[in-house]
Image: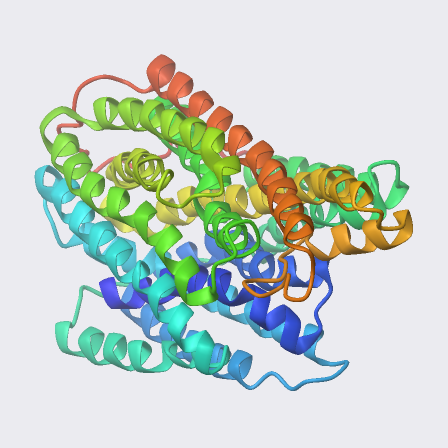
Length: 503
């Protein structure tokens, strides 16, 4: 299961590193570049609930095998993206396919791991699970940098051998695979998929359509209306896609909110950190991997500590401290971005990563622990839907903010050097989703290059300060509403959700 899930994590970071090269070689638009990452995340968040339900209904082992195989095929197709006018639509389509197949395998994989350990050992087990997955994820920035020097297509092809190993190990381990047949909620799936798709689309395209656009607000408002319809519908049927009554458990609701909020920061950091290191610091794609690697140094170490604290004292201590540490790390990091020095930022990057490492495993495990064994995949689907929707929303909103800030900062820097206004705005727009990496300023005055790098650093600084604020909010929520003490047992004879359906 570690190999199966690590494949999806590796893909998030490895693509973030290669984005500038992909954009250049395929001539992608700034918005299209963001959708190469966001399309994956959106498909994950939209289909996670359905994938979790399928794991319980059809069998977890079966869904892992299907998901891994589909992910490998979609990865191969991404690597085969043709050049020309079809390139942008092609790569976004198969990135969405990657996200959809990952949504099938992730909930089932987590459920298999949880079901394999008794309640008092799950914190340690899931710490190892997320720690090793995180460690393998750290390979992404390193491998991505070197593979991109050869060809960016290799960053997708590397998933194929990982998938083969995952399939072999899954076949050898023969994990528990006891299906729980029941009717599937296709209407609920359509509603939540449409709701999240429209909401993220509205935020994502706000940088292109503008906040005064009727289309922008129509997408967002219709999306929220569909979400409200989804909630009402789910509460009215006996076999819903998501048994929303589980949110009556205060601890579960708090864990889910925390996972959603921290994900506004977690995955988007890979994207913005990679672009910052290449644009503002002038690093190559392989050197940019070091920036994200420092984040995972803190993350992996803290994940092990957090898991052990969960088993001994419950989720509250590690999640509360993790929120505070993450807020501090991102705040300190944001303040040093304009120094244009990686050496000055390493410790703060690691502190930010440690904060998230303390939170992710314990919050995820504590939420799943509150469900009976027959619903592990479904509950994982709920929490990971929140988590991946938060990541999609974070990338969309923070990306729009970055584009807006670049239009002001980079245009101002270029205007100072006599660049015409129209040209300055076009150059600033090219830094919206990514920008030229090292060497992008060749042949230009060094003062101009430095001013543009500094302007981009100021834009990224705004984004990172917002990340610090989001982490501060997670700290407050955990401190206020997460119960103290560890969970002692779950009564398997009683459903995790009370039967209150109206039909």
